[in-house]
Length: 285
Image (cartoon, rainbow, N blue to C red; front, side, top):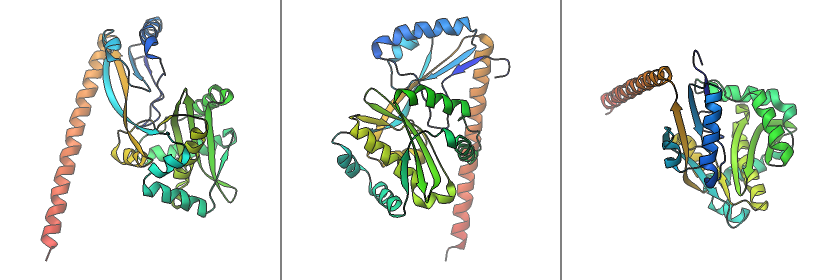
């Protein structure tokens, strides 16, 4: 990134944190190995999004800054029927609607649909004014690393032989991790995304998994949807460290600029909100 060499976990807008899964007793050794790698590659700045909440003392003692972030955890206790009953009414209704409208879920390799997947991902991120973090190499790597080990759920939603959505999730030990989901907005009324989420939850229950981690719940609207599957908030840890003076200076300037921008946006919304109220009051009888 410019003059800096940066190493970080794959990044998304709220999901896709895909951080390392490290047993607590191995955290200290893992950080020692990682720091040796950082120095060998002369990295200026690093940020790691751990998939779980970790012991912050271990990483703080090495000079890292820790941030606690929210995710959504769904208990799979009691099997698929119990999980379905714990889902909110809107989820149960959407699942039944999708099935009634003829949406089918097909499991299998998504490699033949790679171009379509990337197209939909690009469109999704563009709605938030961002570039997609999903690439062909990323997806191929998932298929290779997890698919061949039987640890990847790859499903597609099909309507009249037309693919209208795709979803990827992986699992480690007893936890299912939602990785990424895309859908054709032209068919949004068919609730394909909700049906895909539910199908994989069913499969996870049958495999004896205990928890689904929906991967991030820091954006209120997205969090509300994920929680509607009977979830509750959990936490994961983001750690970061600037190793050089130039990187620390750049990071400080960036954070100051972001704080200023957030204040400006908040002020604009506040002023805009007052203007709306004034107009509504003026027009009221």
